[in-house]
Structure formats: structure tokens, C-alpha cells
Length: 391
Image (cartoon, rainbow, N blue to C red; front, top):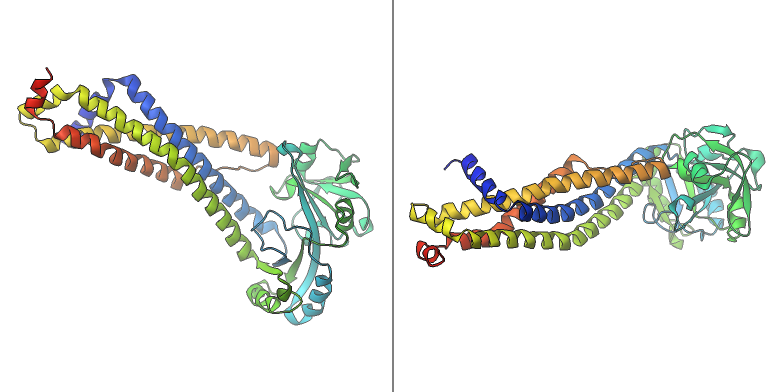
């Protein structure tokens, strides 16, 4: 029998119990769709980081943790490291140093969360992020040093409900007046509140401690060499400080996202196993109900291998149907996530890439093949005598 005829016969077998078939496929679709939604978050964040890292100016970062391992390093670094780096700058080709004190305010309401990014007013925001432009008001300037003023990203201003001249509450210790709001050009800076470094340090009571020191090199291609040289310095690497290049940032973020993907797959595997067992149960029930049919096929000359292929085809069709439905559910989920993240932070937080689509269909097909082995084996062992005994 031709493959197309075998598949048509398998489809007719599934249509005998349409409600059962649809419910089984839907259960598998929910499991597969949830896995794809989790994985799509990693894909979306990879795209965002790849696009946004080009707007970050410095070539190296010195901090207590490696860049990308945490959202922002804690404000626990001794400011004395700045003087050490200044002394080393001529020999290592370091052209600019930017000390940063930054922290994240987390809230149960994501719209009320904020990133407070303090840097020297004399350096300006351009020292860390290139291409920023004010939509209203102005950027930080040297005259803002030590003052309680802030420049908000477009989404930060929207989420916090602040306008030019309003007051941003940092903590009970301090607040800042909004002197500028940025153009909505970068998903990264859109969510930041930029302040003079002293304002952040005062508000959070950390003294002169820093989160990191960003370094700009005369020749960015020397980043690895300079990082290795700094790691050997007793007052830098010897104190446990980490020196990260842009490549390190990308690599560490990739590791974090890969770990999240593995966790997502492990959590989804439970649902996929349940979905696979539902497929096995549905097909086994179909095999039991169609014993006479299989006996009749054997009586007119069908070989056990044909019966096994028929049942296996039904299982694969059922799983592929669940896979297609799962892709549809994942597509709806990704669209909903992107609407939310666009409103919150101005970027797409999830991406259903061609690779994920292939993974989804591959998992559905593999699950169908595995789930069909037992029912197919049972159907192939049906004999004419067994079928007649159940008449």
C-alpha cells in the first residue's frame, strides 16, 4: 500500500472518535506550546542583547562580578580602584574611566520597577551609552555634579508616570528632579533613570562605593590583552575584581539564557510525558475497540507489519496534529508577551524563531513515534482467532 493511502486510512481511524482525538491533541498542544513559549523568551532576550550591546560604549568593565552574571553588580566596590586604574592607564592604552554606581528597584508591579544608573555628570551619559538624545529637556551636564537631578528613559518616564520637572522618589533618603526625558531609541536606555553618581550613592547609603568602572581603550582590539594585564595586578585582579570584555558579556549572558532554556525544557518534559501517555492511552483504546477490524485485515491477508504501520501512522498523525496546535498556541503566547514587553520596556521579549518551530515539530514527531511503539506492537499481535473470540 502506498504511504499516502496508509496515512489516509490512519486519518479515518482517528476521525472515528473525533472528540477523543481533539482532546488528546489539545493536551499535547498545551504541553508543547508551553515549552516553546519558555524557550522563545530566551530567543527574544538573545536578540535584544545582541542588538543593544552595540550601544554600550566602554570596552572593558571592572567589577566584583563578571558582566552578564548578574543584572547589575552590587555597589560594594572600593572607589580606590579608580586611582589604581588611572595610574595604569598610560601603559595599558586606557583613554577613559567611568565609575558607575547603579542598582535596581524591584516591585511586584513591573511598571514600577526601575534601574537607577549613577555616573559622573562631567562624563555624561555618552560615556556609557552612545547615541542618546533628549526628547524633552536636556542630558546630564558637568554642572549637575552632586545635584539631585535625573534624566529618564522614555519607557521609564511612561511607567513611572513622570514628566519634565516632576520628582523621582529614589528611597526615603533621596529624590531627584526630572530634567530630561530621552528619545525612545534604545530598549536598554529606555528603561533607565540616569543620575549624577553622588545622588545614587547618597540615596542608597553606600558612601563612595561603586558598582563598576567602565574603561575605554585606545585600541578596542587590545581588550583581551588589557584584561589579562589588569587581572595580574595585585590591586585589581589580586583583590578578586573581575575584568570583563564585551565578548565576556555576550558569553555570560548566553550561559545564563542557556541555563534558563535547560530548566524550561526540564519543567516542560513533565507535561510532555503526560501528553505522550495520553496519546498512548488514546491509541491503545482505539486498538482495543478495533480488534475485529484488525482481525478482518489479517484474515484477508494483511501482515502484522502492515497493522503495526497503520497504528504507528495514527499515532504520528495525532502527535503532529498536537504539534501544529502547539505551535499555534505558542504563536499566540509570544504575541501576547511581546505586546506586554513593548508597552513595558519597548522591546520584543520573545521570538518564535524557525529553529524553535523545527524543534517543536521534531519533538511532536519523536513523541508520536515513541508513544506509538507499544500500541503498534499490541495491534500487530492481534490474530484472527482473537478477533473472532470478541464478536
